[in-house]
Structure formats: C-alpha cells, structure tokens
Length: 405
Ligand code: T4K
Image (cartoon, rainbow, N blue to C red):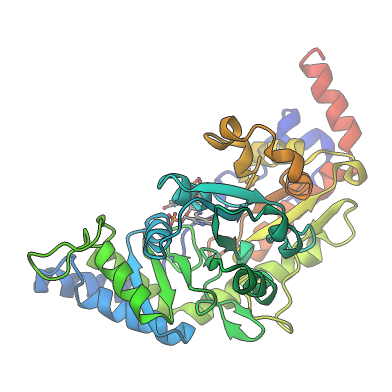
C-alpha cells in the first residue's frame, strides 16, 4: 500500500495508477446472493414473472411498512414513477423544481409538456430554497417538485406552507432518500406523494425500480392503474396510462436488498466516517455533513466540495487526476439541469436566477463508497487528494507544460 503518493508518482503526470481496478461511484450492493437465487428459483417454478406478481406485492407491503406510509406502488424505475405521479396529480402549466438534480426530475415534467421552472438551492443544504420558490410562482404554476438531494431532507414544512397558501401540489423526488428521516419521521409520507428509486446504483437496489409512496388512497389507485396502461378491469381503460410495471425478478432483488438494510447503513456509515477523518484538514476540501443525531440518513452519497481557490486545484482537475488513478469520481449534478438540453435552449438565461446552483455545480464531486469500497481503499483515495492539494499549482504548471500551454 502506497499511502501518501509523491507528486512524481501521480498517474496524471505519467506515474502508475494507484489502483489496478476501477473504483466506481454507484457500484451496486448485492445483498444475500443465495436468498436472491432462491427467490428466482421459486419465481421460475411459479411461472409468474411480471404483472403484479407475489414478489411485487410483498415488496410493496414491505416498503410501506418500513416507511410507515399507507400505499406503495412500485414501478420499473423512478423516472416513470415521477411521470405517473405528475400525471395522476393533474399537474399542468409550470412546476417549480431545483436545477441541481438528476435530469430525470425536470424531464418527468417536460416529457408531458409541463414547463419545469428552475429554482435556486440553499448552498448550505444543496436543496431547493423555499425563500426562492415564492419568487418563481406565476399564474401557470400548479406544483412544486422538490428533491431530497443526497438523502438530506428538504425544508418540508416551509415548502408545504407555501404549497398550502398558494394552492399548489407538493411532491418529492426521494430517489436518494430511502431510509432517511425528516424531523424524525421516515421520508415517504410527505407532500402529496414521494418518489423512490431502486436503480442498481441506489442504496436499495432492485436492478431497476422505483415507487410512488403516498398516504392518499385515490392517488395510489390512480397511479396503480396508470402504470398498467390505465386499465381498470380486463376490458376497460379509464386513463391514459403506460407500462411501468416492475418485474418479479426486480422485486426479488428489492426484497433481498431490504433484508440487509441495516448492514448497508452500517457499511455506508463506516465509510463516511472514514472519509471525514481522512479528508479532515485538507484545505479547500470538505465532506458533506450527515448527522444522525439530527436525522437518520443512509450515507449513500459521498459528496465532497472542492473550493478551487483554497485548495489550489480546481474540482475538474482533481476529478481528472482521480480518474487517472482509476478512482472514477463523478461531478453530479454538473452543470445543472438548466444547462442541459432542452432547457438550455428553452431558457438560455435561467442561470441568472440560479447563482447558488451554479456555484455548487462547479464544486461538488462524488467519491466511491458503498459495500464495494473498503476503508483501506478510502485512505488511499484521500491520500491522492491530499497530494493533489499540496501540489496543486505545480501539477497545473506541469500539465500546462506537457500540453504546450
Ligand atoms: N431523481 C434523482 C434525484 C435521481 O438521481 C435519479 C437517478 C432519478 C430521479 C431517476 O431514477 P431512475 O429512473 O434511474 O430509477 C445513475 C443512475 O442511473 C441513476 O439512477 C441516478 N439517478 C443517477 C444520478 O446516477 P449514472 O449516469 O451515474 O450511471 P452510470 O451508468 O454511470 O453508473 C454509475 C457507476 O456505477 C459507473 O461507474 C458504473 C457503476 N455501475 C453501474 C451499474 C448500473 C456498476 O458497477 N454496475 C451497474 O450495474 O446514473
């Protein structure tokens, strides 16, 4: 183990990569393989592979129970779950969303010809800023789609107060927030509904999957019909629907993942604490704060802010440098949805109202964590970052010289 790499040994300057294999952000958690395979065998024996099979029903019941919500409607991914929730709620015109989120969030609106109106975030929380939401409301606004980014809860009460006062529907993209709380209550039951993701890279994995969770029986019923083409009964379609069904094999994986929830949280938490310790004191580099004395969190995202001025190296160069070492850090959610198509063409000046989003998008990187990463690897990743920060200007100069700049 070569802790404390010297500048000359950095792979970006021609040295050998620290890792012979790639460390990914979002490597899936597999859970108990035997339990999963046993379920798959049962499923094959049963010859019931999709269409609201027994595993899907069990998965829905287990999620609702875990989150303390009345209804869980699982679907094939969170993007379709978002689209269905938006449609089932009857949203139209404009809906307010943060710009600092995955493309899936605004796409779920634009796909249905509803205009996503990008709202700035609060820098300290990375979440939509309720103080800015009010400014974005127009006569066409019908809803607020907030995101519990990195699993840290939005200011739910402030958003609900605005929604109630202005007659808007409030829903949450909780794709990152399985197992997290707001004011001690599990995320899942806030607003009209919340949307979960069980994508392979997520904390709770069903290969592909998502869900609408809600305490509203009518909304759940509507979402349930809409995910099966809008059929109510064998010959009667009553809504425009789609096919958003989850397959049995995905539900089998989801159930298996649920069984190891506590182990997963312990693994992510241990990694998070180790990262915090190892990154402490590196100038300009700060680790996201999760505080389980305040709220339960799943520690899924190891978000690190790089202040290039103080660190002496930019976030982007640091990411390039880490990639050369086979540490595949990600710049989520750079450059912000408002700077991606179709939004950057539709709203070329949106960034003027999103200064905090733009600042954060230029500084955040995600580092590898989860069950596929151990503390020894984390120490080595942090040692590379320390070397990079200690030698930032020299690395930049050498790279410029190499490229003839
Ligand atoms: N709302 C929010 C706030 C979201 O973040 C997302 C999705 C959604 C809604 C929509 O949820 P879904 O419709 O997906 O259920 C990943 C995920 O695809 C996506 O779920 C996630 N957010 C997004 C932020 O991240 P990428 O572009 O990072 O995936 P990809 O293919 O680059 O994989 C990440 C890393 O994981 C790679 O280094 C490879 C590794 N990997 C990935 C997969 C799938 C593996 O090692 N094994 C695997 O099976 O999007």
